[in-house]
Length: 182
Image (cartoon, rainbow, N blue to C red; front, side, top):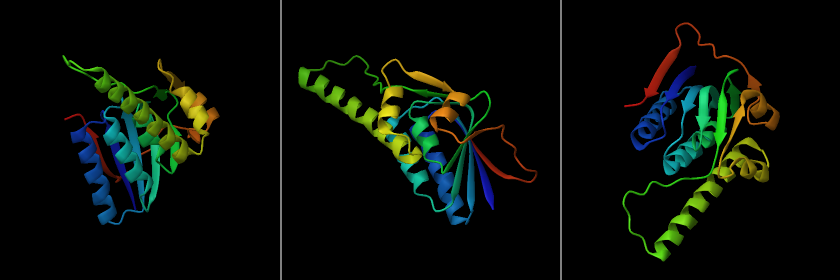
């Protein structure tokens, strides 16, 4: 029994909670396979890394299918699938970690703490993507330079980030849930 999960949202607290709940419901309903159709611009690193770890730990087959763009921390979520596919026009963007600070006055030790924290989050994303995909850590780190690198589906396949390029096919009478911006 397969459940299709369409996730076309940024990785933010509310959307991540909805995805986590949908996955939990699938486990409780004894689905054998989760087929994710994903397009995400990334977002909250903490939420993304926890979702990736959760998906990677699932007892059923998980297929990730990039139907548009998978950017930033969404690459870790995508990488956590046991099978990874890209649509012909899919893209994958890797980059460092950014932090939004609104009108903050920081002392030097706080700046160092923020720098160290962003560096650690970038390393955590790289380690997760590497562990989930089997791609050497140094290759993932090279993709995550500060300016960022975007891979086409063909480039992602060459690097081993996806196994194949195809368009998704949803079967008639498929069981689908969609998680979008709220």
